[in-house]
Amino acid sequence: MEARAIQRTVRQSARKMRLVIDLIRGRAVPEADAILRFSKKRAAKQIHKVLKSAVANAQQAAQRQNEPFDADRLRVKYAVVNEGATLKRFTAAAMGRATPIKKRTSHVEIHVGADAAPAPSPKVEAAPAAAAKGRAKPKGAAKAKRPAKARSKARKAAGKKTKQTKKAST
Image 1 (cartoon, rainbow, N blue to C red):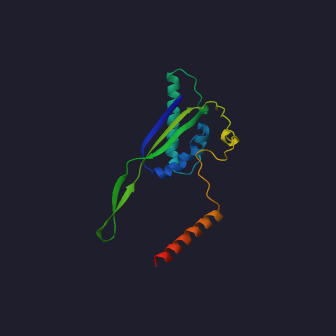
Image 2 (image 1 turned 90 degrees about the vertical axis):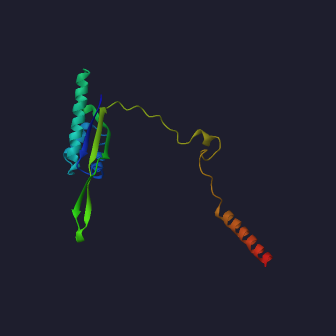
Image 3 (image 1 turned 30 degrees about the horizontal axis):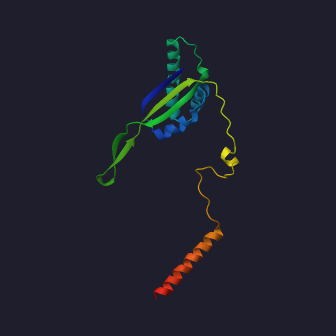
């Protein structure tokens, strides 16, 4: 069962709210709930409301479909904070000027879903089959540079040619 909840135009900047939303992304709902309840950030209160709403939406969807519901099995599948509309205000400044004030808002979106059993991941070999054929690097790897001695010899040879051409031209 998957459900979502969105709260729009929360009167706090998205940058500050992202610090809190990063703490709960991908966690189990009871764990995320505990993190939000004991967080000292102001954004945690708003995000906690959205999380509770998403869990309630999942419960309602399960009731509608006549399925068993267990809130402890839910995980925060998707949690994001986007920027909302900015309220633009002005305040007085020195010498009759005005200074802008930007009161930022944000949109919080949380998706919760049932915790599925993790699928076994396929094991990746340390050395690919191409290395067994004798190639040291994969096909897309960058070419190796020439050794330092070879580079310096090439530079010296190029320098000698330029000196010889200068003498010939005079």
